[in-house]
Image (cartoon, rainbow, N blue to C red; front, side):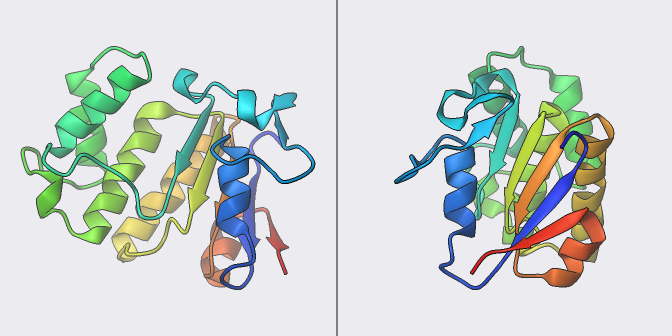
Length: 177
């Protein structure tokens, strides 16, 4: 539903990540179909910003800085490079400028992924264990990013093992078994 956040819970190997990958159009289902925005998930145009999938762990160009990664990502989406928006997103997630991702901790990489959310403003946000490696402040930033997507009418589907986190950010939980 519009503005809704749903958490997927369940033991390791049950298919939470696979479901997210199918919804993102990265994996084809063995049977059945996932439909998003009234069309098959495999046909969603992620490059237009309708959908953003943040995998765990997030992937970046290690030898580029955070700014360079975000700028490259915007260009890949077909959007103009916007140095001011990139700098603002980095500041909002508490990351320094000019440091290569190679020097980032796991939590800093998760924060850089959150900066993507702030820049993309997706209609549907798919998150795979987004709270992993985040400190308390990082989890607060994550909850705020989820709330922003929801507040703009977007939906969120996230996979997690942390029921307390799920209860804090999701409208409902789906337990896979």
